[in-house]
Image (cartoon, protein in one colour):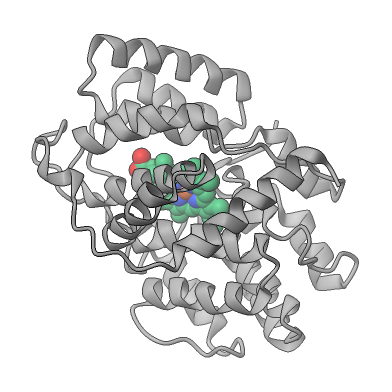
Length: 316
Ligand code: HEC
């Protein structure tokens, strides 16, 4: 196994062990500073910010699968936050970018070739910390806190990381639950991954779902209509294939748990996702449905950990 991948597994396993810890810490960075974007208190439904040109360039590059463009945008954002250390959204984007593997990983997933995912990088930590003290929006506090909590645990600081993650989970349950699913998969615990994935999708659905795949098409219709509980549940500008990524993961987790009829119900429902026909991983989904490439517990974590699975619109 590739060395980087092995190291990455160890890190995520540590996370899996720690993420379950409850915390009594109520320390909320939200108390510290006013929002950078006044009036924006919760963007979990709709993006409400007014990104500057460099922040917009970052997202354009992510959507376009343009690694060089993303690197250039991040350099620019780094210069910007030197000039304005209160720009929490730019700080958050720099921090998040460290977790985003290059598009070669997405290409390999699409083609079915072996993959070497990128590692979480401790260099993200100062940016994520700064963003936490400069933003008040719970959507971003939960996201940045989740990424920071992972980075803290990875760096060996579990005393900080556990509470950071617990606070993050209360701020943004969707972002942090996806991180939990990833850590379950890295620990090769398919049962927990499926259980945690249903916690995520039932939160998104606003109520119970049939755990045998019944009602899958109705759930997809809800995602297509943008009717789920918060925007991280379905595709949008920032994650043009979020719904597809989520449905593939749900289907794969059923397959890994031996429930092939449920898996097939989700693979089929996935074809009804409105962005499916232009998704980079459509070939992978088709190999799943035909049986040509079965889901594999040893590598499944790479799919959700590859942020661009959901965030890149088209591969160039
Ligand atoms: C299963 C699909 C999926 C995966 C995998 C995924 N995301 Fe997302 N992400 C979403 C969706 C959906 C949204 C909300 C999109 C929207 O509003 O357009 C989102 C939103 C975001 C946002 C907030 C955008 C904004 O400024 O409002 C960031 C940052 C982000 N994701 C980073 C990441 C990172 C980093 C990873 C990898 C560790 C990742 N995502 C993996 C689906 C995903």
